Amino acid sequence: MQLKTILNRVQKFKSFVYGNVRWEEIDGETVLLVEVFPRLNSRPICSGCERPGSGYDTAPEARRFEFVPLWGIAVFFVYRMRRVNCAGCGVKVEAVPWAQGKQTLTQAYMQFLANWARRLSWKEVAEVFHASWGKVFRSVEWIVDWGLANRNLSGVRAIGVDELLWRKGHQYVTVVYQIDPHSKRLLWVGKDRTLATLYRFFREFGEERTKQLQFICSDMWKAYLHVIAKKASQALHVLDRFHIASHMNKAIDQVRAQEARDLKAKGFQPILKHSRWCLLKRPENRTEKQNIKLADLVRYNLKTVRSFLLKEDFQFFWDYVSPHWAGRFLDSWCFQTMRSKIEPMKKVARMLRAHRQLLLNWFRAKKQISAGVVEGFNNKAKLTTRKAYGFRTFRAAEVALYHTLGALPEPESTHRFW
Ligand SMILES: [Zn+2]
Figure 1 (cartoon, protein in one colour):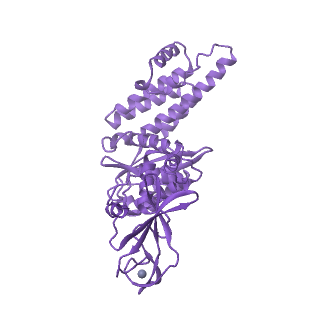
Figure 2: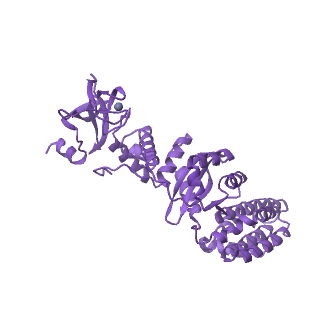
Figure 3: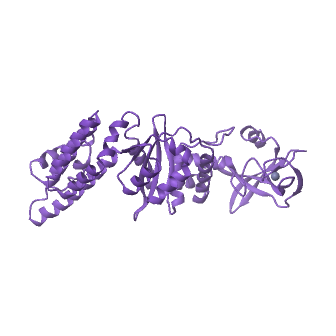
């Protein structure tokens, strides 16, 4: 069987035919070159308007397009580009079905690399397929851009706004997720977490779609609250449970660190040592050892323990059904916490009091937005940005997030190479 036969099976073009296949040495590596020719009497397609025109001339030099490797051997298409005399656009280079514009990688190869990049880190994909990191990045970027241009944004009713540290040194991105029961995906990524960032989202999302939003879930971050109130006041704004838990955990962390220092200064044995995780973990995630440590801690009347108990107590808030009774609970919890004399916890109580209305919106939206979705996305997004992708630029982080969480459509292909 000839290689041409296989190629015609996996990647057949209507107006082009495969010619000879030959070996060649490139940079000390033996590769396969596959000649491609236009079919006889086929008219070139104008790259400006995608319409057929009459041929103008043919480039003297052939261009190379990297295709999916075969048995560990790099494969290139070799083709002399024609120019089209287009009635509408003038003289233009022709469009070819295997690559766009100035790309040197075929779409099949880019789709191949991009799909592997969902399972492995970009660095690993580059290593396994002897491609450069840049090639992997360009492939993922291309498929993400294609997906963004071809996705359907209708029917978005509920969104969640979150922030994410994508690089050390307080480099944040704002991410917006669709959190409808029928569709959960990353919708948007923007640099920073300022007023301007979220305004940009609403501008790009468009007024028409924004008007149709019914629920918006977010943190108590001031910039977000402000923009949401201004841009989508018709939507029910809900404060996210996961964000409130993380504020409490931060407070407990502060109390614990301070108290540990105080105890040490007073010469007490380090009872708080190794206590961090048993205080922050959810009951169902604690190990036996952490439970024992916790039981041990409770014997001391420490601020840390009292903060922890306040946090545990607050969990009951979420079990309420009626906003009225949830409100009563919230008030009594805040009252108790304000009397605790534990400053970081008092700060949380003040914050919750200030956002009482938004907190109670949770009970008005109950069962209509899926709880825990934002948290789930947050974990996956962190994994994406932390994994050894070697991000140096915001663009790379943005592309990776869309690629892994955007549920983007992909161009159809007749053969799956991966
Ligand atoms: Zn044209």
